[in-house]
Image 1 (spheres, rainbow, N blue to C red):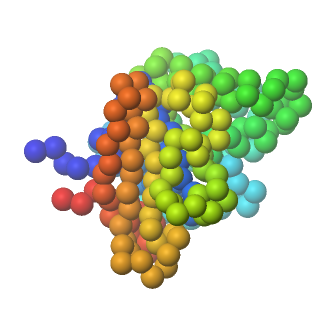
Image 2 (spheres, one colour; image 1 turned 90 degrees about the horizontal axis):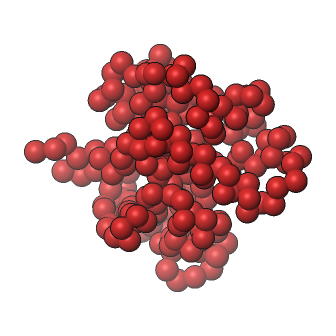
Length: 228
């Protein structure tokens, strides 16, 4: 019997996007994945990239800092940012088992993207294409996150996110291999009877198949798990 883990829902060589409203737990989901990756790849490293003004990532205390490498995108030099989104430099990371990028659209806030003449749609296409190429060349999962349109979702009866809620979803559907849409009722209703539970809708864009998986969520630990 295969142990039920979140990492079982992502594949080597594929680009996976985690999407949901703010505070649904996208960062916690990535960090849970990182912990599971360390369990099965004890000699390999997980690279986690994020964008933060205060440089405060508080959920990593249980992770092995020797194999879990955190880097603030805003502090990376120009050349390094391009190494991340290209394939140059992979030979320097032979022990890389996964790359996690929290809020991939934060690359658009960096100086080289703000100051070039590319249209926003071209920048998104460039980023997604590079991330997918990186996954394929390195044969690792590249897992990115982004927010969905919160205002639109809060204004409608059905609060579960859909593919069309993702910014630039037409490009996402062209390039990304798999989208995981996260939902927790308690984000919208603190008194819900579904406390401590979550749902993820997995959209396999390559074959057009969808499935839904119920998850548990430990709010005090900010951690997801797959119930037995």
